[in-house]
Image (tube, rainbow, N blue to C red; front, side, top):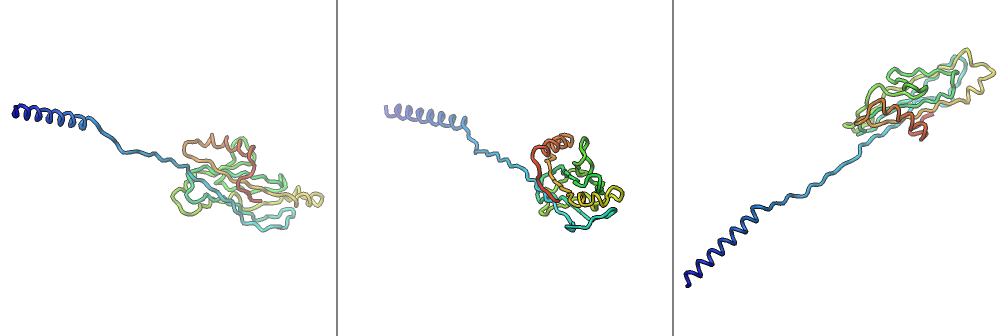
Length: 188
């Protein structure tokens, strides 16, 4: 009887180990996985070299150099500038060829290429929008010189991410945003 009891106990132990081993063999667990997402970064500055209160007269050429800089670690972006030339036909700006007029506008320009400054720790200055303002020698007279002298040139700079967008859609967005929001980065 003792032998039978020992055999039954041994069989029960074997069965328990078998069931426990099977359960352990059929179960598994993974570690936790956390997904992290971040927004990109874009920043611009607009600076200029200009002598305030420059004297104007018919035919005057005034040095004025507005420069847009794309900030350090900025994502690839399309860069735009809106130029409100308050002089109208009384003064011409020599727009740099690296900036092209956005189709359908008279004063919004786009930089020639996507600017990627994401790997840099320093701001990246782009080519100046223009370097001189030339006062028209024929249309500026003593009768209107006072009005012309009160004119201003206001420049806004703005950027749109290039990743996931096409230049044509950013140009359309540039038009819509400038109509709605006013100035982003401004120099006068």
